[in-house]
Image (cartoon, rainbow, N blue to C red; front, side, top):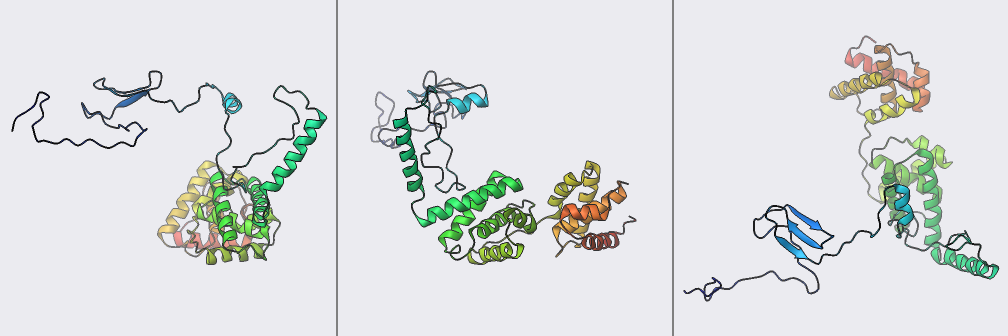
Length: 324
């Protein structure tokens, strides 16, 4: 077998990776030194290996903005794109909104004829956004979810999950004949339970102005029809919530967490209300740390009865052998 002038053996075939037409090859490893330390120089439009200096590709396109911003206000002011898609908006944020400012780009008042035209366009824009019954249902439900999450201080990811749960319930026909506010509150409670965010059913029902039994009935309906499985709520997550409202010190909170961990190892917390256990553990810790807090005060903050705190306190004290 002979070799040609380029050093290849005659009869030997070389295979090259096929690249779709119009798209440059995506290189992740340097072909010379097999290094992965590659940098993209958008000023020169090149991809360069940091180890051997080989230019792997050129004429790259910069996908970033052409402007610079040094503060969040400058970034918001200079950005020319809308918000990302969100399930918590009934149209997922994809539609156009005509504002009611009635001023042009220079801040000057629009003429009356132009204002009337913008009023007509705004009216038809609203009509086209909610042209079907499901869109009107979603618009009302997402507004209710927005109010609930703002009142209960729920994180954004939980809000998105609750909107997804409501949309699934709407697609399954579970909202028909039932209260939109009740299904929205049940969806939010289900999302809080799924994300292990400490929000009780009583708190959600109080914020939604719906009876607790109605929200509980809709919640059980969602679990049954959507085949949702909920994790068991950890009482340790409820410690900081109760302690911050009762103004309990960090040292006492750590003692309460230690008490709950010891109770978990002995299997005492199974089948008990997480809020009641957390309140009782905080009371035990307050007694151990000589911090003056009454059972009634902690029970009111935890939204449980004083009898519950007393019974859980006795159970923790007897099972752990505490002298509190």
